[in-house]
Length: 207
Image (cartoon, rainbow, N blue to C red; front, side):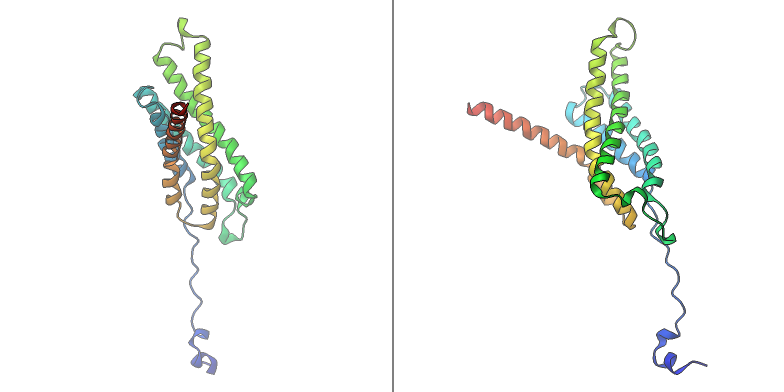
């Protein structure tokens, strides 16, 4: 028989609310593969157009996608930590954001250098510079240019994307908006480069 309290206030008689599952965690491997593939194509394409050749652009795109998937898979466990429902911690995501920025800067630089090295290898092979008489100081310059440029791009992008993505995933929010923003980062670099070129041209004209 119901008590007086239950009759006056039905909330006392209501069954326990069903346990709500925590939001479905994002797939780091999938998301990092998307960002890596799109950025590895757009970054060199926006700067050089088809000057590098479609085989090289395709190689950097595939390399960015595959290495992004591997990297995302490797980072997911240490950064996500134990599930929130289990009362666990957020892993490396709980570090202060300046440390996260430095960490992702280093990871992004290494990631970009690897993709740049793959692109330089194919470009040099197309030009016959890997084997035979073409091998020399010119090959070293190609590798240095590609790997340095790609390392800077990877570090700059992952320094903000990695931190925000890790925090968003930790909070259980949707990650697709940050993916769209990350894929648009190369366009910002392209605009900045052309803005600098225009500024230099205007300064030259004022002299």
